[in-house]
Amino acid sequence: MSDTGEWWTAPAESESGQLIMVTGRRDVEKFRANPRFSIRVEVTWPYTPKPDGMPSEEDSKVMEQVTDLLNDEFRRDPVAVMTGIFTGSGERNWVFYALSTHIFGRKLNEVLEPLPVLPLSISAENDPGWEAYDEMADAEIHLD
Image 1 (cartoon, rainbow, N blue to C red):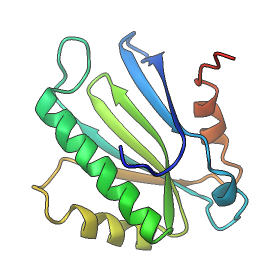
Image 2: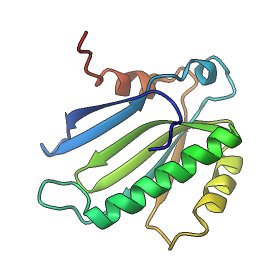
Image 3: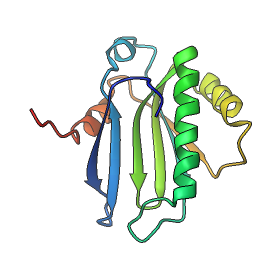
Image 4: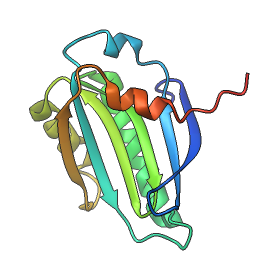
């Protein structure tokens, strides 16, 4: 993953009991303090899972490429910030907080244009209090 913030990773469990690896971003204060970053956008890639629910090595490589491309773009043009990644049980979900769904969609298409067509779906909701982020952050394991 590109150096675009402070991240943590912890295991969680899906509703079906499969492993979900949750990766969250810690350094979100400047985005969270800006009330314009109130739209939570989730980009989902369903994949054919291995028996443990995780993606194949080939899918994993493309997923990491997508993660790096998106992080790099939003570091250059901060119209959104990636705050979480959920992988397991046949899905990869990237979570962002964005200024605008229109601009986010345009940037997503621009960044992914060189790649083959991916089976992505996108959903968005208003989350001005970052409640979904707080729920995800509860999964972080603190060892100190």
